[in-house]
Length: 228
Picture (tube, rainbow, N blue to C red):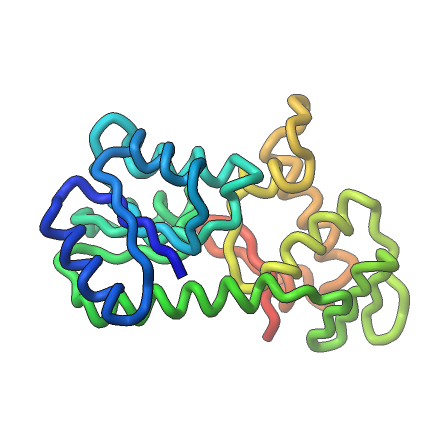
């Protein structure tokens, strides 16, 4: 497993390198945002540990750039920063970070969370042609959805959104991410359209759309599919 550490503090880089290499990881490093971007596009990384306060390209902007590119969208990102405000954490998660760790940090905890993120990512990448959870059944090949054995009629766009969330269960996506994933570059589609389609899907698959079981909202961040 190859990890890219992006931080402008050499001591932090060496601390992370030492602890990650001890656990069997291969570690590369970059001290500026532009250098990190070049490395990501020229190499293959399994995970990125990203500081927010970076020269040239700030961490949030770099994260946003990677999440918008199909080639780099799936690389898990752990943000590592001295910013401890809850608002900063929410912004980081909205930009697509998979986890958020504040400085000072425990190297052992960070390594454990790196392993946890990689484990979740690996599980999420397993090819599932059928998804069953509770009373809901989704057949990804046949574009078929059933609730308690009864067929549910969804539009092509609604199914695409449901499939995107279900295949990445537990991961939170904001409106912009869902717009990119479902509608691509269609300029006329607005973030409000995401809410409309989520409500339509909920009206079809949820027994109580006001208290959804499958497609849930994380207030202030976005939507996620629950496998509970």
